[in-house]
Amino acid sequence: MIPIPLIERICRLMFGRIAKAHPGLFERLDEHRQKRFAFLPTDLPLAFVVVPGRQEISVLRKPVEIEADAVTEAPLFLLLALMEGRCDADALFFSRDLSVTGDMEAMLAMRNALDASNIDLQKDLAKLAGPFAPVARRVIGEIRDRALKDQNSSAGEAAAWN
Amino acid sequence: MELICPAGTPAAFHEAVDAGADAVYCGFRDETNARNFPGLNFSREELREAIAYAKRKGTQTFVALNTFMRAGAEEIWYKGAADAVALGADALILADFGLMAHVAEKYPQQRLHVSVQASASNPDAINFLVDAFNAQRVVLPRTLTIADIARIGKNIRCEMEVFVFGGLCVMAEGRCSLSSYATGKSPNMNGVCSPASHVRYRKDGGELVSELGEFTINRFPAGEAAGYPTLCKGRFDIADSNGYAFEDPVSLDVMGELEALKAAGVKALKIEGRQRGKAYVAEVVSTMKAALNSPPDRRASLLARLRTMSEGQKTTSGAYEKRWR
Image (cartoon, rainbow over all chains, first blue to last red; front, top):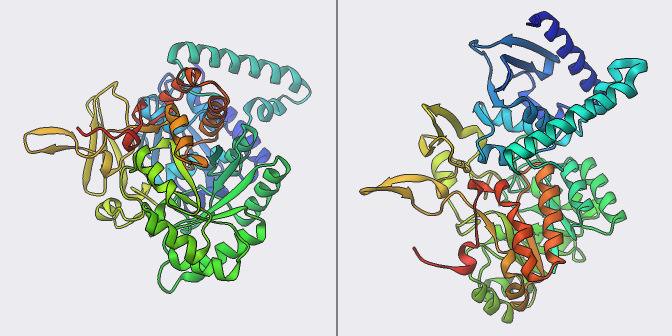
């Protein structure tokens, strides 16, 4: 079992890299920037809580009582696809692949901010690997392609990718 | 027929243009447009860049200023119109007669479209707007049959645009007070139907419960496709039965009636969905474009894949082919 502090450290590095690559990322959040957004992958024993205004991310091990203003639950692959704007949140809500609770204004603002941001995890995170960036980009791309293939075969077209 | 496509963000705008939209419609990030949702819409600078991008690709940009002006705060809408004109919008989509009068007087060369929010749904009303404000196109409500549209088309002096795909509003748009009744906010005055600030979702056993203000809108059993939390698509206890009073959670799709719409004199086909993500916009616009360029017998199979992205994962031709229950 990977220790939480190590996962948290990796997540903070990734969050920092994405925030640096997309400086206007949370501009659309307006008054919701200081709110606590929880993302719960249904297929992982972890929960991620983000406070955009403080560029803060914490990782918790489930089961845990989450203190958050808004909570989104979906398989990890779909949460990552939403971050990249590669699937439509409403469609995932209709198909019941995604559930949301709490402050819907804040959650909607977050959804729209991410959708507008043009995050590309393959491109953005590969830079963390320094001189090995091209290799990292290829590995991340392969993982994403495989996840996409698995998702499409298991969920039909409910998760629409562009 | 032109394909008019939605964009709630610059990213979605680019997707719509790249997917083959003839025109993209969008709005400013304020109460001047009927999709005034948190985090959505365009700053002035974003609209400037979007219009420039569209022009390079030969695509038109329509700017929606389609809420009704608040008395005493008209300047917000006047400024919106002035900025949209200055930025090079190909048309303004307007609902408020006062704003139409202002635009017609100040910017007589600016193309003016009548928003569906204006509730202009008969030849007298439409021709009045043509004569008074030089309106060049009317967006018709989703409450008319194709036969109604054909009859209107023969008796008006402007172009007709109709919704063919996406969210299905079943009410007299611009006059619906259901959202106001439940929350005090409406698409007409605030740009929001069933505002997120008043929406709550909770789990009750295996059920997903959606609430709007003090009303329970629906309880979706596990595995049942969900819909938006609007009163018009709510499931209620009525007398001895439980069911949908107005309409099911369902989206509009009348692409199967393209020939009839063309024969009725429709000039432009509109896709609803400025609140949807860029992935939805890309998928729907490219599919619709392909359907428009395909023979009629191929369209149904092309469009079938969009059903899973639709509200309730179902589509209907709604009032266009009215069948009473």
